[in-house]
Image 1 (cartoon, rainbow, N blue to C red):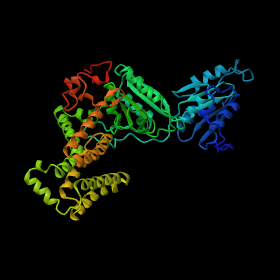
Image 2 (cartoon, one colour):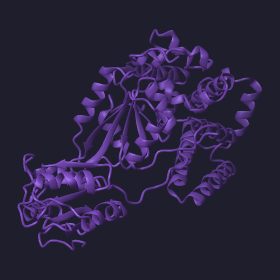
Image 3 (cartoon, rainbow, N blue to C red):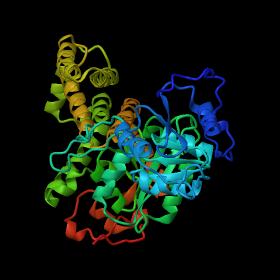
Image 4 (cartoon, rainbow, N blue to C red):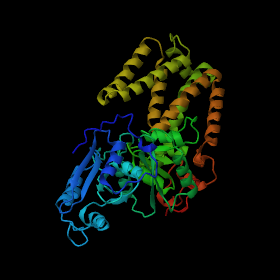
Amino acid sequence: MRNGGIPNSLTSTPDMYALSSETSLTSSLPANIELIMGVIGHSGDIVLRELCILHSPCNAALVYIHGIVDTDLINDYVLSPLMHGKIEVAEHGDYGDKIDYARLKNIVASSVIGLCEVKEVSLLEVCIENILSGKTVLLIDGIEGCMVLGTSGGKSRNIEEPVTESVVRGSREGFVEDIGTNLAIVRKLVKNPNLTVLFYRVGRETRRELAVVYLKNIANDTLVEEVMRRIEQIDIDDAPESGSIEQLIEDNPWSPFPQLQNTERPDKVVAALLEGRIGIILDGTPFTLLAPVTFPMLLQAPEDYYERWLVGSLIRILRYLLVFMGLFLPSLYIALVSYHQGLIPSKLAISITSSREGVPFPTIIEALLMEVTIEILREAGIRLPKPIGQAVGIVGGLVIGQSAVTAGIVSPIMVIVVSVTAISSFALPNYSGGISLRILRFGMMLAASILGLYGIVLAFLLICCHVVRLKSFGVNYAGAFVHTHVSDLKDTFIRFPLFLMKQRPKIFRPKDKRRM
């Protein structure tokens, strides 16, 4: 039966995490029920199902949470066998005699319950944690402790194509919000006994499950220990998304650059594991974290490896060009028009001057107006419902841009510069990397408005110094740009043919350095 609630108020209910870790369940069914329900019985979705094991005088009870268990499993493989099966548990086969509880426990676990996961638990804290994780607890009068049954289930989203990382060629499989499903996807792709999964609980109040995944024959032990150390130090009420974990374990929280890579794609996670990197999977989000990461990796996409090397290399070079344009194009325009008109070809200079005739603002204000407008349209397009958001992004950009030019607020060439810049930032395969680019672009524009090209050079040098000093779990963020491992350059600016990429990235110090 559903438990409709217990008279205790929510505020007076004992906190399970305040209980002593040594609190144990007894052999008394009423006492055990009172212990468990005293902790979680205030909630209306807790189900307490009392039953009598047929053909024996033993009373029992099931405790689980409605909605996060598979009730069909409970009905077919737990309740039905317990209530309709004949269990001989007396010493001489006569139930009037003393019951052999050790034999009863053995029979129930090995012959009656038809589930794969059946384990014995004695501590109350562990019992409660299993119930909150979607397991069912079986309590039998006369048997000390309880049996935890693997009945996790409930509704979850089907496996679909990743929304944020679309590809033309490659897997259409994406992670979902269930950590068990995500680990199963990785296991299906990596049929290797060296694949290691370590489980943690994060969040003092929510106790979310987190898994650290790596290949123990490839990943560096020091790197694994560092990831584990940082995760164990997390102290937070709740980690609703992997972004919360990222912020708590990154090296430099003041840096605009992402120091962990996030992805919805299982094939991307598998490729990272084979390089000696580590995956961090959190329950409740489809985004998996990969550590460590270098800046060149933010410009790599799965399609680079699925297409022939010439195609993949050409696309990657194009991405580097787009990063340059997204970072420097508005600032270069501001510097040339405001300070270095002599560097502009004469005909182009005349065209720019004529297009700016009547514009009342200096170049920096004009650029900031357009850039802020683009950011507003981008944000509005994300927050609005999908069909409306697309219309707002396209129509809003066209209408506002044309209206601003007609009104003489901005020049036509500025609209072109800002549009090309926005499109360039969209071409990055990593969304977090694109945000970093957008932040730095405003800094470059301000530097260009103050010192012209000198300001751009100084700002770029500051960015380079920061990137060179930045670390991601002890790995240099600049990657192959600064370290001396020449073999890693085969997968940086261009992607060499696969038969020439025989070494794993040495920057991660993998145990097994050869991939073929």
